[in-house]
Amino acid sequence: MCVVPSMDEGLEQSWWANMPHELLREVLLRIESSEAKWPRRRSVVACAGVCRTWRLIIKEIVKPPQLSSNITFPISLKQPGPSEHLLQCFIRRDNGTQTYYLFLSLSSALADDGKFLLAARKFRRPTCTDYIISLDADYMSRESNAYIGKLRSNFLGTKFTVYDVQLPHSRANMAKSCSTKLVNQKQVSPKVPTGNYPVAHISYELNVLGSRGPRRMHCVIDSIPASAIEPERVAPSQTSYSVSNLGTSFPFFQTNSTHMENSISGEQNNKRDDVLVLRNKAARWHEQMQCWCLNFHGRVTVASVKNFQLAALPVNGHAEPQEDDVILQFGKVGKDLFTMDYRYPISAFQAFAICLSSFATTVACE
Image 1 (cartoon, rainbow, N blue to C red):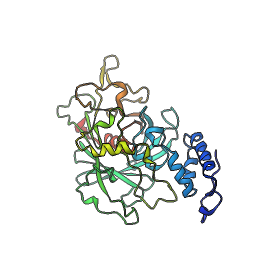
Image 2 (spheres, rainbow, N blue to C red):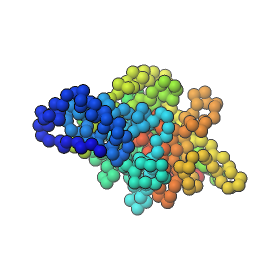
Image 3 (cartoon, one colour):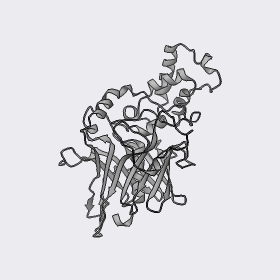
Image 4 (cartoon, rainbow, N blue to C red):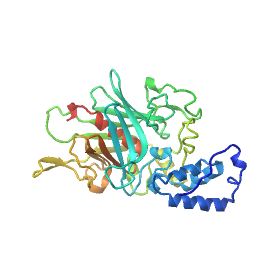
């Protein structure tokens, strides 16, 4: 474990900031590679908060989740997950306060202490229901500096829209909603417009005949082109937060976009690309167990209509998704405990919002 100097006034002129660049880079490289997992990874975050010199080097060293499979800084939650495997997380539900907490799994166990990532709270409205998503586990409000987006359902709980507080990229459109009014001026940088930007739409089929079986789910990710899942293509990604007031708690809100910059630019300029569409994989009826089954590879242990696996709809619309095509899976392992595993091209924020919709659907879909 490395010992990191604390932030102090005038530190830029101190010997910490004036260490030889190559020596400092080598030290920070070793810290980044050795502190690969939480909770030890907090040393990397601490290094980014020492001074501007250290922060710039850390920004260059730390790679996004797609390439590193690591969630290091808050911006990582808005960036696509790993390309090669599902990143394992879990959600704890507090029914008393209608609050949901997302954690990064720290081991292969279905339940551990975890690293807190996001929280959401349910707010009922006369005509809809909102789930406010926040970086803060204790204060979930649109007036909070930690507010990063929301999930909104229709009155029946069959259709949902995921909103991001920040424009995902140049292709996204501003939502026409009264809630797009500017929040408190101290909350955001004046250089970045803030509002409600729709980034995904989720729908559940109405079960009008009352037939038994899993829910049928359809998810359109407006902010990601369908071509993002093709080889050598890259999904658009946020590289910075517009929040300005979180400075001392989260001193580092940017990542180096040079790894993906050219590919992302090409995706954004291709206006003809269709958006990414995800559908839940069809479950199979198990005669001996007398239930519908999906292969969660041991990550789900309790039968529930909330359980699902989402895979990308093939471009040609004909081929069936394969086992390794799963982009997001969600399932129950305890009374108020659920696993959430996701991968490229969606982010932790998008995956969490999609999973929240499974909590909100009504009996009309079951």
